[in-house]
Amino acid sequence: MKLLLADNDPARARALAGLLAQDPGLTVIRLDPDTPLADAVAAHAPDVILVDMARPDRDALEGVRQLTARDPRPVVLFVDEDDPAFMEEAIGAGVSSYNVLGLPPPDVKPILRAAVALFRRHQQAQDALARSQRELADRVAITRAKALLMRERRLSEPQAHRWLQRQAMARGARIAEVAETLLLGQDKDPGGPTP
Amino acid sequence: MTETRVRIGLLRLTDSAPVLHAAAAGLFARHGIEPALSIEPSWANIADKLAYGLLDAAVMLPPLALAAAAGLRGVPARIVVPMGLTLGGNTLVGTHAVAEALGAGDALMMAPLAMARRFVAWVRAQPAPPRFAVVHAWSTHALLLRYWLAAGGGDPDRDLATVVIPPEQVVGALAAGRIIGFCAGAPWGDAAEACGAGRVLLGSSAIWGHHPEKCLALAEPWAAAHPGAVTGLLRALLAAGRACAAPEQAPALADLLAGAGVAAPRAALLAALPGGAGRERIEFHAGAAWYPWRSHARWFLAQLRRWGWLPGAVDAAALADAVYRPALLAPAAAAEGLDWPEADAKPEGGHDGPWTLPARPNPLPMGADRFCDGANFT
Image (cartoon, rainbow over all chains, first blue to last red; front, side, top):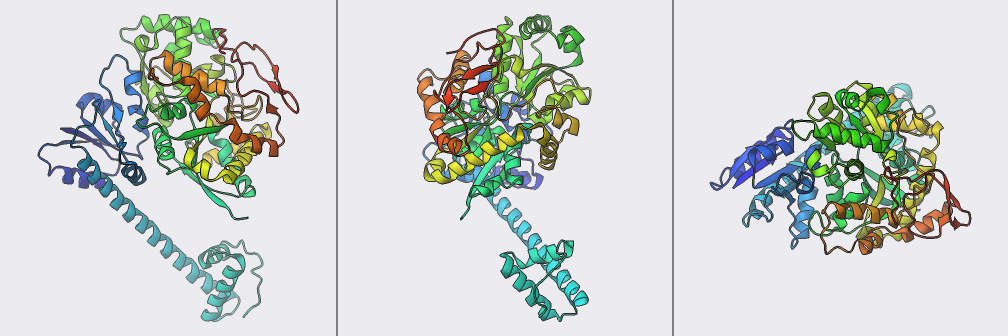
């Protein structure tokens, strides 16, 4: 079985191709982001196509049978009618799958499961990275805002911290948001009693 | 008021403006909606995420909403259309060679049907069917292109090699000679002219006057569970459509579109907006652009059937009624003080100029809805 892997993330594509290479019955063709998906399907005639949902040319696989009446090769979105939860999981993870036959090959589900698991793990890692970057940025903003308050309003460090806390409570905002506003100089009159 | 978070999908296109405006101007918040905008790279993503509950609402191509509901993408998707968003706004663009073959400068003045006949003669003179791009198989663009070509005596399956290219890539594909033309939404036609890649041959309104373009689609299970949020969402978008229709709003909309990553020159962004200088402009409000006409749904389904794309077992009239849901819009339209049409379908075509639609409390002024071949669709 021939599988076309169109994943715009090179590290993830490498990992998935490595995983799928363990299956001796499977030939994996990796597609770079710049090669149009439809051209690759025509050139390689894969049985299964795994597509990163971040690819804009995914639309080129939709309705191919209808649009190109002269090319009889049908490309059909893989839909597991009996397992909507799996479909939801796959879409949430950002991977979709097409078959270049009328029906999916019978043994395709384990491949898709592996792909979905890998995409999810990647997504969780990305989310964790974004979260830690945000936390770090928050920490920097709070430290700098406290320094500003200590310098310009002659507060001690704990006083500056309490001031930010109180402002956050009063505005229903996070401390880091108050700190960022202060640093942006948007807070012309910081107000609030000096502790 | 507690806000309901609503996940709204859109693409980077000029006709996404009402959603961007509603978010920026606080219209969603005014109606209890906390918008979570999701800019998607493909129409397939929008269809999948609506079908599997990862989006609650989206700016959508009407034929794709209907195709998904008809089961053309696998299991019939539970998608409903409570509102139209825009009329018109697409362009047919050709390379300079195509424009020359059609009569260059004169081509722009030619009647759309006469141009279709010349275009068919030109494509048939080519050694192989030339590649022409649309943005999705089940798009207004594909169906209007095929309608126009067939009206000029052509056979869209034999005379053209239709390919699907994402809207953001059509200008590059045209410039590189990979396609001889495309039909895409704004700003890409004007962007192609601006960079010298090709010429706008025709605005899509010349194929069908004031044709429906984008609609709002909702995930049906979400809509059923959140009737209050549906009305709030629709009120915000009705108000946004009215605001977007004002020419003085266009510069701010162009800023919003650029901010959302629509990577086209500012002049191309302004061209298709109200008051713009483009051949084809988008209507966001007038002519009941907001009403989800069941006759529009029937026309799209009739076109899908015409080309053999709709399974015989699908009852088109029943599907149109199941997907297009004016009843969902009625409370929002009343709250926004809009005149409400007396019927949920109208004859399509047949009006060469302005006409008046029976509505309550006052009749609605409507625009021309002529098909390029003069057909009437009832």
